[in-house]
Picture 1 (tube, rainbow, N blue to C red):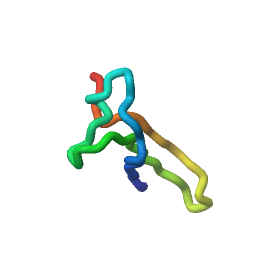
Picture 2 (cartoon, rainbow, N blue to C red):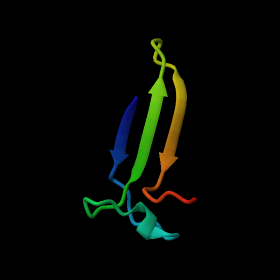
Picture 3 (cartoon, rainbow, N blue to C red):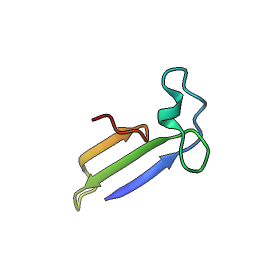
Length: 52
């Protein structure tokens, strides 16, 4: 499993506060799980805010 932050993102026009990180920059979060052959089993990406 790995998680990465892509922070080279400009301010989104829709719901920008959802993409603002604790590092005070805009970004998109990617979390992925892969098997031994490096094929993705599961992935999730999006903003920092979790809508429940």
